Image 1 (cartoon, rainbow over the protein chains, first blue to last red):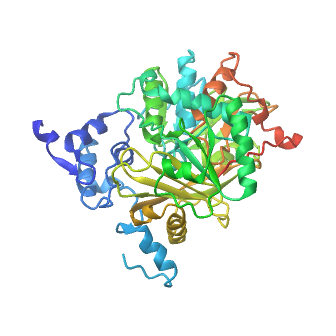
Image 2 (cartoon, helix red, strand yellow; image 1 turned 60 degrees about the vertical axis):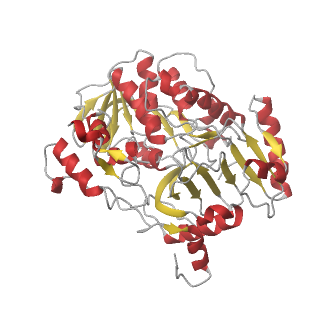
Length: 99
Length: 386
């Protein structure tokens, strides 16, 4: 337990396992949708690709259920971080983006 | 907040956004007991958690100025008042509203006069002065701007959870994941509320359902003159602090703010958007947002977008909220149709509504924002909207 504060779950936002577990214990938290909004996990440049599975496992553990029973958060576009000016240039090039 | 559904409540608030949670707190703090908040998903799942979360006092109508100014004051001390140590990230970096065209500048001059008269420290700026505040601003076509240093931005999740946690400490029950399916009205009196988890006896139902306001109104046979429209928004990667104010352009239907975390939030309205509840994101929005940024804040176009999402504006015929009761139906209250600026006025609006519900003298007369104004033809047309 003591090492929870050293284990990084979300590398985009530097969120530790201890912070995730503390948030899950908050009476206002109902699961992964609240973790996301309170801690910004899954919302960084990786789009949740590095933390989503770890978070689902923690949520499942906390509610004493299985990962299959925990609904994952919505995937938000774009799939990969995209410079706005690359999108702006694509408007004049028939939709091709060279990011 | 997995509170069980009680058999009875003194009020059932429909909607766990900023309005529902702040109202629950304001009622509880006035001594009301057995307050129930019903939310079909999780807190902030609707418009509150999807909004740009700007807080501005620069409006063109006295009612909006009074509501937003008082709300701003409440937000300044909210974490202390609600004992919420995480804070609400209220950044008062100002709002810079860009002026293009002589008509807009004339309107801005009138707005600033009115705002100053009501105590708002806004002022008219030249393009050069605007660029001093936001150096990466393009002055192409810019005739001037207005600026109020007290305006800003707050974290909508923490603000809502701060209210909810304080309300819960005062005994408010939150039934999350519970869907309202009907309202039991007998004669001219509310008797109870039906949900997918059971029936609750209650003499008062409060409609704080945001995008779904008319779904709830129709449960008592009332068709509100409102509709919901999708508005889209994006967040960029976080960068060093480089922009203090929210930059707004009515001409470009856009707003852009750097939050304390470092990300920029950019939103944009679209005149072609069809009516209806739609939470999908579109590539077209990304294209239009990118083009707009390249034009007015070109440096920011170099940032990478990491996420885009959508939310619903619940819109009334005059773009102003409908607050109060429905004549002839005892026990039905609503705060709906904020038309895209609910978050920033909710702290004061819910406080005044709580005063009205508990029989206190209201600090503000919300009469002009009643449902009856549409029949009377007394629309409140606000010139300053995105």
